[in-house]
Length: 321
Image (cartoon, rainbow, N blue to C red; front, side, top):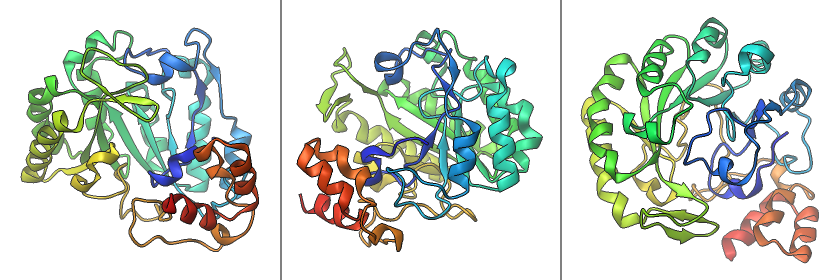
């Protein structure tokens, strides 16, 4: 199953899966396009067996701390419903597994193909996210379905998923008016809320980005007023507002930014730095569950210590540093 890495410290849904390696949509702003996969050699990625094993409670060395049905986030580095799905039907089989197990998940897509599985998704415990920001993004999204196609698909999925969320990522200030103009359409369609996050790249560009760890982000001061205005506009018409950028978490309606907060069966990880009162499960306090933290320090002695320590010990040491 997928690796969690340091996401434990910043996200309530750190367990991520992908049904394909590579993505035909090749969005120009995608960090995975920049660093990882050959998009011309798309193939199955996570296997059905791995998914079934995880749902059954079999954890690998990086997920031993997770001893409950923590929701899975599906569609991390590739779109589950890209064109090859019509041929291979890997995502269909994932949905069948989710349906029979009732395991909670959040899936992110840009593809209308998901609507062909609407009746199957209706039997799942799911939140569906559609990634869409503005029609102006066509310059970066030459190989994706259009903004209007995605909007139509998102609206049609409202009656089938537990919730539909619009994922307004990556946001840039130039499209603020487009985002604001779309909110009433989302609300009238029954969409639950909007998730927003600023542009993030692996190298500097012309948008005055600044380094933040291994990434380059649009500076806080160039986004904060936009995000406040969009948040207030969402609340004025009854849309929920979530931020996918940790710098703006204080604006979010929930620290669970995927839009699954308070849904039955969606108990998330509350042992991360989003919470003042951290809650550890029994498993997290057992020795040998801390290896997921090994990548934080990137030093062999510390990595070896994490392998022997408990998740709780690693978290408390991380907070201390």
